Structures are given as structure tokens and as C-alpha cells.
Amino acid sequence: MGQMAIALLRMRTIRILLLLLLPLAAGAAAPVPCQEKVVRLDAELQDMRKIIHDQDIYIRELHTTLAQKLELIPNAHLGPDKLYRDCSQVFAGGNVASGLYLIRPDGSPTALTVHCDMNNGGGWTVFQRRRDGKESFDRAWVEYKHGFGDLYSPDGEFWLGNEPLHHLTSQGNYDLRINMEDFEGNQRFAEYKNFRVDEEKDQYQLHLGEYTGNAGDALAGAHGPWSDSGSSSIKFSTFDRPNNERGNSNTQCIRLTKSGWWFSRCDSGNLNGHYYNGPYHAMTDDGVVWYTWHGWWYSIKSVLMMVRAADLEHPPPVLTPIMDSTQAASTLQPAGDVDHQLIG
Image (tube, rainbow, N blue to C red):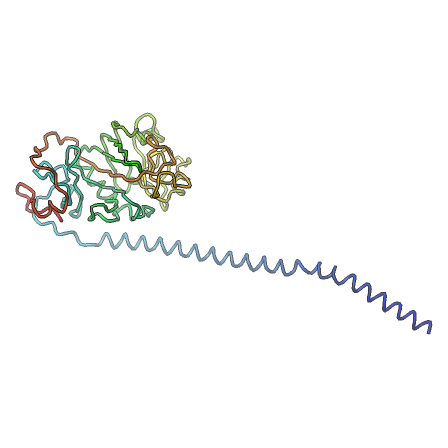
């Protein structure tokens, strides 16, 4: 019996020890499932990174394919041999109605449909319009190259294209005019002399001259002695092609905004920024910004960017009120020996 009691005591002791040790053992074993979960989640993360990488490659391939197809599009029907080179010639030819016209700049492989603005002295070729944010300006290089948006609606938003802009401004000496309006109905403008955009191999580099206007010189960093690069030019950049030779903070600004622009002093003047339906709705300075007017945090309501030949000195007299595009389409034809109509 004594041995049995001793055996029972030992069994009880072992049982107690097991009861004490099992929780400890369970606690010690707990990290194993956690470690397995970490390994599994890490594998899933790697898979997601691969998917994102593959999608990025796919998108880039689509952009390349799009660019190649755009280059293969047959030239537009040019009609007569003589076409106006820009809206300045359209205006000088006696056309005083703002609207859509067909032009062909020197060196352009195709004719272009452009909006001619006959206000502020007339003869302005519009290459950018912002109104309500319906058109996203967060675009890739190839899209800014060829242009995008709704050129044909009176209030449609669009970018004419860096390639057409290069052909336009390479014909001679051009002025740049920017009209802006804020959400309170206030209007400002900025004008620059000697506006020119280089060809693609030079990254559509911007050249600007003297500033005049009442909006302030938000592009001071792109010309004159205050330029970031030490010269009166700055390269165009998009999120997929950030052209920044000096590698300063402008590169980060490009990645933040995702729009295409001639970035100088970050977003001091970025009129292609994200559109916000209110002046101070932006969470950062990535809106439609003209710093010298409203600062970095105010996103402007509407913008019009346009160019005009600097030698347009004697526009024809305006004898009747300027009509809108719809009225003009049914009543006007360009003067002279150029046989084409205002496009309605």
C-alpha cells in the first residue's frame, strides 16, 4: 500500500505539473502560428508588388502602342494649298468671330482644328482651357504630346498638345496670354513675350521673356536671372517622365501632382494641376495654382492659355459685335483665297 500511495502521489504530482506546464507550453507555441501568418502575409505582399509592377509595365506598353498608332494616323485632308498658319493669320484675314478654325503651322504634318479667341485684340490660338474639372489633367507624357480633352464644346477642357504647340511657336515670335478667374468671380491675366516650346528631343523646353499683367509673375523661376536652372528655359515634365536635371525638390512635386507642366519652384505656377470644386478644398498644393495671385493652397476656378504672333499690329476693324462659335459657324467664311469655313 505504501508503494501504491507513493505511486498515486507521484501521478498527482505529475498531473499538477502538467496542468502548470501546459499553459506555458501553449504560450511558447503561440509564436509559431504568428510566424506562419507573417510569412504568408509577406508572400501575399510580394505577389501584390509583382501585380503592380506588371500592371505598370502593361500601362507603359499601352502608352507606347498609342504613341505609335497616333504617328501612323493619315494626315488630315488639307484642302487648298494655302491654310492659315495660326489664329493670328485667321484674324488678320478678316475673321472676327471666336470659334473653331482649321490651320496648318509650318512644319506640322497635319492640319489642326483649333479654337481662335478674338478677344483682347484678337488672333489668339488657345492651347489650354480649364472650366469645371470634367477632364483629368493627370496624364502621361504621350497624352500631353498629342493633346487630349474636349476642344469642340464651348466650355470643354483640353490640352492642344505639346507637338502642335512646338510647331506653332517655332514659326516666329509669339506672346503668351493666360486668363484666370477665381471662385469669387475675380479675374486676372499674365502675358509673356518671346514664348516658345522646343521639340520633343529637347523635352518640350519652355522659353519665356518679359512679363506683364496683374496676376503676378508665377513663372519667374522659368525665365530671367531668377530661373532655377540659370537660363531662361525649363523642360516639360509628367509623372512618367520627370525631367529635372538638377534633381531638386521639383521632382518630388511632379510625383505629387501627377499633372504635366513646366515645373519651376515646385508648383508656384501649375495651371494643369488637379481641379478642385472650391478655392481651399485641396489637401495639398496640387491644385490649379498661380502662387503670386492666391498662394499655393487656393485652386483657381478657370484658366485659358493662348498664344498670338507678336507682329500682329494692325487687326481689322470690328464693325459688329463678336459672335459666339455657333452663330459664326452659320454666317462667316474666311476672307481671301483660303477656301475653308469656320468649323461649327
